[in-house]
Length: 169
Image 1: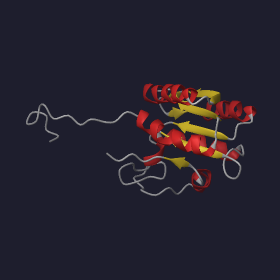
Image 2: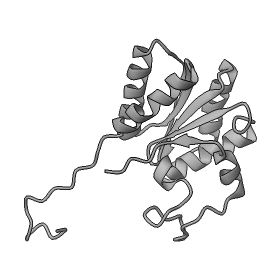
Image 3: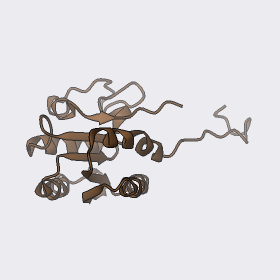
């Protein structure tokens, strides 16, 4: 099927990341989380997902107290930029926040959040985007050296209690 000359009209459709937002919002409602923060990667996919999250969260009458976007470069996100965004979130006093980024950058965000005391007891982190399928390296989303299990203990510690959604279609 992947030979387009033989199958010119075969198309693989990928669902929008909006499906993650639709799936996770009931968790916010059930837990009474009416204030949150979000840190997103500055790519179109994650910005459109973030925009949809902001719209849908507002429809519930809830407030996003920090809407932070970190920049990425050819070699990934800047740690200093991520720290600055997380610092802005921490200053608000909100204890529920979402990371909306590709897995490699989500790992960086989680590690820095751990260093800043923004994970674990008293905090709720939500994983949106490729985080849920790739955070801990899976056969379909291998790590930088081909590994299929997360070995970075800081990432594992920071991910404890993380809520995410795995969409299967």
